[in-house]
Image 1 (cartoon, helix red, strand yellow):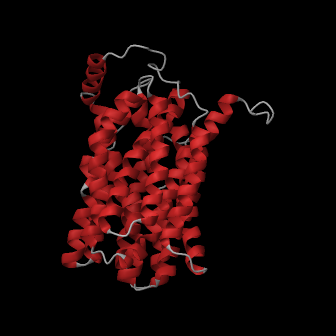
Image 2 (tube, rainbow, N blue to C red):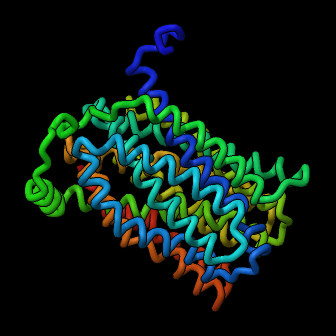
Length: 388
């Protein structure tokens, strides 16, 4: 089939690996854009909303280190297959779930499944070109940005013609089913341990603890998680902020999420050629200062139109953060991408409770007050980035 389409196997593999990130971010974008409606339909408070991220994250952290360690063995292919199958099932479960508990279980499955098929796809791309991890991550983030940008737009259109969040999740379950057939054709054998028939658990554990003693790796993992406060964590509450604090309707709140993602996507497009000319650390340091200024203005300005402009500027300025930080993280352990995934999963503990903390502060003092905590992200980059 590939020969008839004149597509080389390695090209097909690369396309599918990037397409996996597209699917994952479509799902993530769907969650952020539909969150205000889901909150109202299930009558949830802010703490319950926070727990929809915190509890699945805890479950994922408990399992992802083992997934990452096994990902450096011949079992990587099986891990990816199981992850995409579980994602298809979990999306359908969200669509049909009638209780908060059932939705929570579905999100737990989604988080763990993402750790299986998305992280291993990302790791495989890093193994295929270890000398250009930042550039590969820039393209990875760009593809993901397309997914996050499209999702709220699809939600806005669906809401406008009368469909609800359940129908959207069901449609995404069907899309994930298509990926099952695509993933089944890929070998996932670019890492060092792919051809080893015998697995040495003690050696894998020694490699894991050696990674935990790598100070630069740990610093980059922590900075990546803290930077996420101004990336995914800000995106997750953007719709809620515009609906509950600014006072716009559901459609306009979804438009705010769409603005965040589309402008961020523009920044990600520009990042790819920029990294060919400018050092990534310099980009991070300069953009951190800019983000602090824009974000404070976003929280303080009273005009709705100005808030749309400022959230767009914040998103544009943070576009390169994840790609640069994660790319450098993988470069600290070349050939051991699964081990990087395992250690990165442990790093999630530093940021995992953030949604619940934000929810508790929002319930006690209002969402406007809770939003100030996200400034920790750019401040951490200014303090913790390597000087060279």
